[in-house]
Length: 169
Length: 215
Image (cartoon, rainbow over the protein chains, first blue to last red):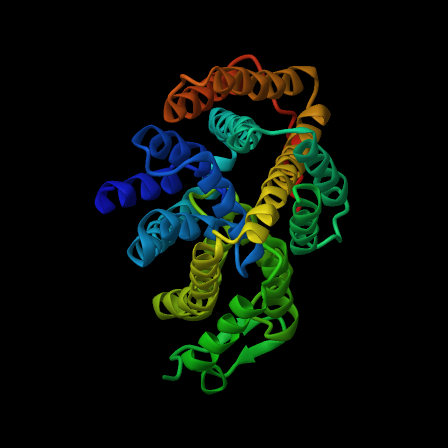
């Protein structure tokens, strides 16, 4: 794998998306065809990103490590630190942009499509492990538990781990 | 290093001497260390400190910063940290707050991934991962719905046209993405332009609804 190309992919994806996971579809789209990561790798990175402290967007750091070791994780860190600085520019023109109808529509279009694409990819990640009934039971359980706002994400993931150990033994 | 200018807050001025960059770093480092459980925990920690404990800013300022953070590129919490850091101590504040937040959480993430990569061949762990992956997918779907809900609700109150436009943009993207052959960048940009076109021409957002901002 080429560390520079990988950095550019992560940087670009973060620059053209918002939120910690908005960059997932674009990175997924570039990594998979190159054979740098599998759906399984993506799912693992997302899980570590949610279990570790800090924003969930650090899943990219985990992906960097799994695909390119320490160098990969450090480059990934840089790639997700830089794009947020664009906010210094956006904050200055926010009041103006907020009142532009077409701009509001543009932001909404991008937000909705990134969430729609995200949902499609989440479902696709399941196919990485030839999903069976047991997997679907765990998905359903996580959705139910996740609907309670007070339920910590870590608890749900750990319950998922135990369910996996029991169901697949 | 002491700060040069005092900070205005609703409880009066914070004297520069009482707020060194080192102390600022320590505070944000503690956010980074404590924020197990994802972004909402971190946001709550920052909010409590910024408004109540340290009185860096008013609730309105914080709400404004958070609103802008959500439309800016990249991780929302990083955007928020940059704005708050600049608010407290200019460029130096930005850098110090970001480093404080990032150093602990990134190191732990790297260590956890390294630990996982080292142990991943144990059968027990492989079975655990087979359970964690569907759980992550379930959580991801819940997060998506939770992020969509406020926007869809707002569109619903804005009238039939706005709500239909939102549904069209959402399901259009899902259908295109599900084909599996679309280039993601193109889908995003064209949906953005399509949204701009819709809201610039046929869809009108009533003024009174548009003014609502929620944290």
